[in-house]
Image (cartoon, rainbow, N blue to C red; front, top):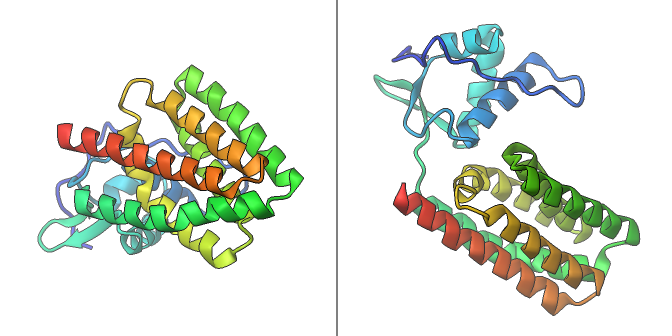
Length: 232
């Protein structure tokens, strides 16, 4: 790939401590993706494999492989005469993602309220307790991870593997917008309250309440992230 203007040599990309043994390719992918999602690697920023490898203290091959995967996911792209570039944030793309989440994730919440087992509901309750702790501590990274896990738990409880896989892809595409949305003061506490309302609907076996709470949650995310994007 063409080398272009490099990321600063002084930048050290943090490689998250793996919960399980990861390949070098997976380590590179996770680390670079986290930097893109958190906007530490900024939209439109030009990158080089050499500098990414140096920052990660990894070889070029796993970084090449990670970049290929990130290109498929749309987080980076190869631009003629520029090389690897972090994909810009598109409001049109965001609205398209939200439209699909509103159509599909509300249905997942309905099905979860009808199909979730007691063990799955207990997992959601533990997740809600943990996300409140992350919100109070201001730990955005843990908050995002717990937020994603809450939505994964609901998707799994819907008992529809195709829907669950589809929503996982939408959530990946939403990650940068989640970080942008959390710039708003106290928005993380509103998210906790919204998760609690969704969980109430599921726990009470009330499909209409679960669907409405999920729709309100996604709509709130759309409004807040749009405001942050337009104001940035």
